[in-house]
Image (cartoon, rainbow, N blue to C red; front, top):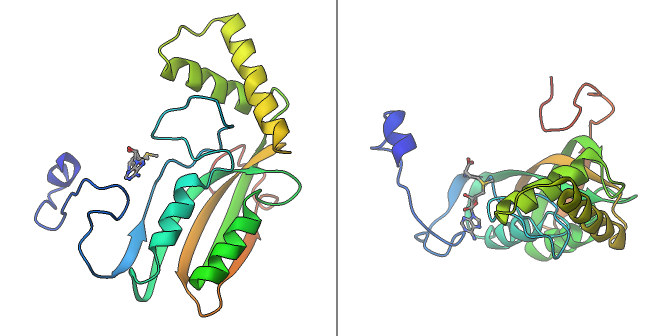
Length: 198
Ligand SMILES: C[S@@+](CC[C@H](N)C(=O)[O-])C[C@H]1O[C@@H](n2cnc3c(N)ncnc32)[C@H](O)[C@@H]1O
């Protein structure tokens, strides 16, 4: 609401508080955009509500996908993004995405822009651990950070995760449903991590 007023578009923006689409009126949309909690965080690691996408990063995104059939206008599309857990396959949740795409008749396209090492005590693991500790209100000390980092590392290792990948996602209706991954990581090595394509 405040953001709409600051931008002078309050007559065209209708803020609504809702658990995903639960409070949304009937009808379909040309464009659905979501910046949901979408960081892959191992189970048992407390992490802020705004960011925790579950162990594979798709916990909330898959719930959004499930709500899309019947909500997209003809030629409408949904756009979101995330940081997915990945092992040798890109990403870990590919199988789940494929079966949801077929079941719901959706065309899902992921564009992977970059990756970061995970599950090896990397800066990514330490950042997840530090965020987790500060979310709990604890002081971040050397020893608490080491301890939490080793839990993060163990959590990723249990899932066979050795990297996280940053991605954009587009979803549209398609009769039989499909998932495609466009991997542009090597074309943009300057992306240390993130979604930014220079
Ligand atoms: C990554 S933040 C994005 C915040 C803001 N939309 C933006 O783009 O700057 C994710 C947001 O999703 C909200 N959220 C988490 N679960 C939700 C749910 N089930 N329904 C609606 N919003 C949810 C969180 O409160 C948080 O504000």
